[in-house]
Amino acid sequence: MKEDQQFSNDPIENEHLNKYIEKKVRKNSRLRVGRKNKEIKKYRRRLIFKTALPLCLFFIIIALISGYFVSPYSKVKNISIEALQDQNQLKNNLPIQVGDSLMMVKLNEPKVIKLVKQNDINVKNVKINWKRHNEAILKIKFYDFYAYFKHDGHYYPVNDRGETVKQPASINNKKNVLILQGFSNKKRIKTTLLQYEKLPNDLKADVKEVKKETTVDDPQKVKVYLNDGNQVVLQNDQLAKKMAYYPSIKTTLKRPSVVNMEYGAYATPIK
Image 1 (cartoon, rainbow, N blue to C red):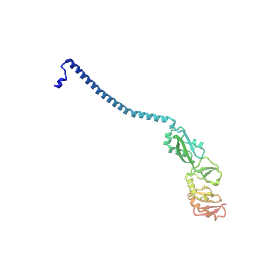
Image 2: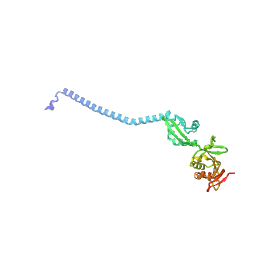
Image 3: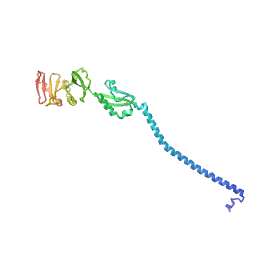
Image 4: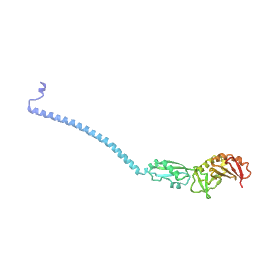
């Protein structure tokens, strides 16, 4: 038989053959275990990498954020103002300063603009632009003052919201401005200014002063003083409507007069 022929009857030869076979089996077994160990090691490395990567990224992001907030890039580096007024005075009243948190300033821009307006009633509009990431440029527009409130011989600028500046100003040419006198109510001042703005330019130029003449029965009563020497009595919320008739009435006056236009129209010469 063939299988019988493969083995010798010699005990020594059979012993060597058995040792050879056992050695081959052990070697093959080690190879299989080695392959398994390599696969296990690769799996462990992948597992460690997958676990460690998010943590590493997290700490890197935290480090970058922390580094940014302690760096100069996170602070307002410079503040410049584009305006026609005294910039030094404006800078002293600004609610933001160099070195303030850039993120907080940008997040609170509407509040900053509101505070700028509150600190200076002359300010009409404010716009904040940014240059080189952290340099603020404030574009400030002011009200045009064409009216002044007269009190104790001093003249205080009034903006079109009816707000009066606390510091008096000097007027070089009173013919180009409107003088208000006796008003204490901001709403009444605003109403008078709105009515005045509706007048044609030639009639505006003839109006010198509007003085409060209120009574218990007529809280809207005012007297308009004109450069031609005449005076007109009417209600301030009817100023534009009633003054439209003044040019035709003026032609009938032979001497400076007080024209009462509250109810109808009649003139009384000034004594």
